[in-house]
Image (cartoon, rainbow, N blue to C red; front, side, top):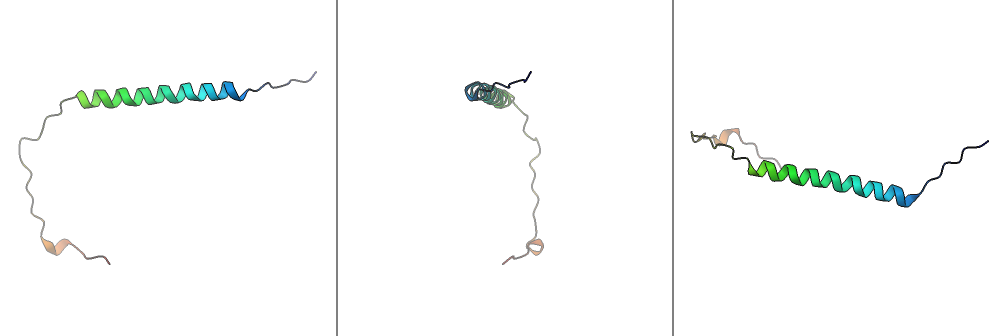
Length: 59
């Protein structure tokens, strides 16, 4: 007795599309909720002067 593996490209395609759409929906919802979070801004303004001596010219 031989076992025959029945494969169908349409079932694989539909499964892949469903998985892809679920991942995209999760990413979109995650970005949406991260956008809704109100992160506090720093109270102290950061002001640091960098001297020109530290910069190197790359050609």
